[in-house]
Image (tube, rainbow, N blue to C red; front, side, top):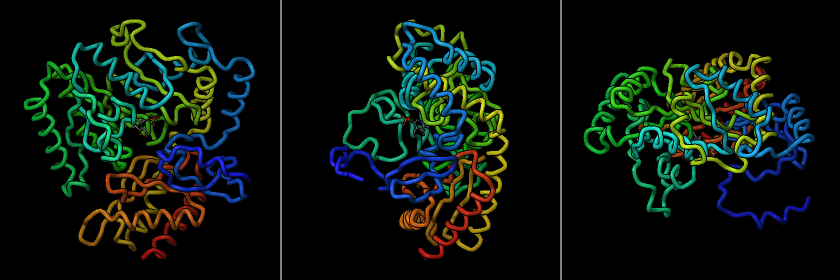
Length: 421
Ligand SMILES: Cc1ncc(COP(=O)(O)O)c(C=O)c1O
């Protein structure tokens, strides 16, 4: 295999491995030199139906043979209409109108523009540890690590940061943490961004890149209430937590809170580039026609893949399966935690699970987490880390993963923990 061309790729891509992939099937990736890996990264939470699910592949192939590009400003097409219908069934019923784009960041940008257009207000609140993307506005909204911002100042103004209720990170119990985060949010609205100039609060219901931390339901409910009292839109960024990842269609369902705008991407189309935002018709109608759009958004092949993805998730009962497999995974990790105190906390919802590494003094233990992830990789298990210190191993397998594959991953992890002691 000639890999000379690598020198023509920009080094700006950071890499968790240097393997050359050939093809994928279910939870496995196969390399060009014939190695098999258990892919517990899902391509950063994308391949929820597994790699190359036959129904998704068929939908893509059949659509590509008929039409590859039906531009959304010029024509309507059935896959997009069907997708909007499907989404109106799986999102909270109030969110019945959709706009489509290509990437997570692009959808976040769209949500911010919609919030500004609909409220006539400018400012946006985000939460500490947030990751919303790498475009200019989303970079200003991203606080998970300085690498995403350093050297790119000045950032887009009008973004304000409130604490995320990350109990383990603060070293407090959940009640104390929620109380603190709510108090600081209220102070932010009094001291930095007045409600009359605040358009939206954008939150990941499960903090993703920032550390795989589910926001407690009590926090989400109080946040909803504060938004209502102050005419601020609540925006849920479900780019990573959506489409069954947490054992519900969307993570926000764990708290019964309905956002004003929902942002979706990643798991939506099993790997085809597609993202979207959902809101009520009333809200969407406040967005001046032509003031937002994009050449490729809602691409016909990607839309067909998304419709097939939702069908597969229904037919294979992947939402319940994700919840059940998540329980097994967390129980297995907690068993290992008993023998390995360097695992400070195991937390998660469904198959969005974290194992956070701490030193005996209770400090983030990045080197250990990185060494364990590397040792797992050597044994054929692909894992990603996250968090500001990179001391959190995230468990994010395709939702089609079965019990045997989970046990295999846990036993590789156990071995890696022992080897890297
Ligand atoms: C919660 C969240 N929002 C937005 C994004 C940005 O998505 P993209 O990389 O597709 O632009 C990500 C990507 O990881 C994400 O996890």
